[in-house]
Length: 119
Image (tube, rainbow, N blue to C red; front, side):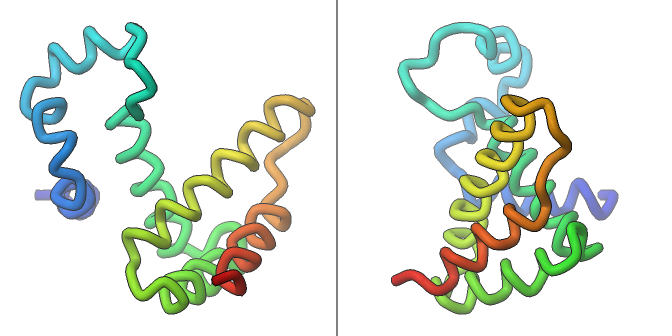
């Protein structure tokens, strides 16, 4: 497998609740536009894990690697830390889209760091 496929497989293994979605991609993709009763989109969720992993690997935006490492140390679990970072990433993207301005990497990192200092 390619490195990205290995990384995706690792994150997929962390989410057995999505096994059926990943096993039957045709059915999962067909259902993507349908109301889901509040269930999260497994493909969006996986892509956010991959995005955060990539951001950390290249430290872009600068400082994200350290912020995620601090949050991971605070939580004692990389997976849990990623879920918190996802909320910060989603907020940054939503605010960017709403305002029509570029994503604010500094605000994103500040939000992750703030979580690293909270109990």
